[in-house]
Length: 411
Image (spheres, rainbow, N blue to C red):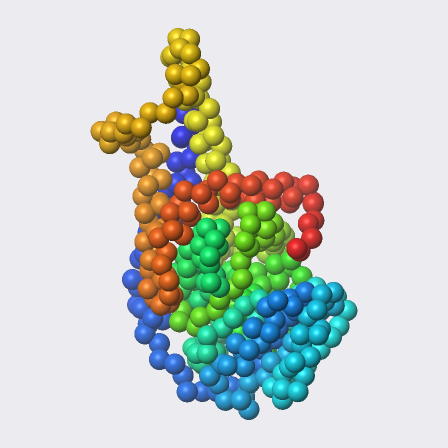
């Protein structure tokens, strides 16, 4: 059997998902989501900022929260210093006199304990969780709280992109984040969101208390909470024009480490406590499409990499055999001629190109509907041609870690 045949189910699944996203994007619920008018309601809001060794970013994060366009008597900020060992405690002293900021110092216990400590220190109707290396736009909170007018909504996600991307690695992640904007916007219309991102998400306080607060969730507390909300019948909405900018890994090594944590968190949560949601029609699009395709994407990413490597090796060996002993200098001489007529248009290549074009289209959609500033050309090119070379490292390591029970540090 040809090696490419192994990849066909995964490419077909990718294209099927893109068609599903397109049809959902054009549906009435998704269109209404893009036409929302910001509500005039102003429930009390408390924004919880867990902090662990964030001396370089915590000041900017808090200043962005203090600049939010929201009645000052309805907004409070709770910073929980989770046993930082750097200069974070000293940086936070500058905010001790601000009546809207409460600072709590505790021993290190993990992000979920910091979130629970912050929530316990407030009685606000809405609680938001924001990473200490993120920055929000002034209008973000107004855009978000309006979605809690629906009593079914337990949490709201926002539009997230990379803060001032400069390197190619950051530009590629920015493109991926903008693709995520489109996906969350579309999936919110069918209640298919499975993670409430840490950089900035809001929750109905009574729901968090009902569900027992945050858990570690295998270092993926935002994913675990989202799945728990979904299991208990709550909706997760998306405010597509509420903007937050997050710091991202700047090196390949730190990127792989971050994604191993995300991927193992997905596998351990969904294969563990929430495995009954996979393929379960009770959970609609989330159970029947999103979670199964999450597994499919991990397996497919690994297998597609194997197919590409196999074909490269096989074609190289075949070329060497056909040269009949030509000198090595000839084999290594580059050939720059290129003729589109001889481009190998196989079924595999055609499907891969269709899937890639579909992804780029949704990246453009995400940028448009969220009004994300900046150019994406370099990021898209890097994401198309380089990201696939890096992703197999974290996919393979994640699967091996889960299979062997290996636990890696959060950072």
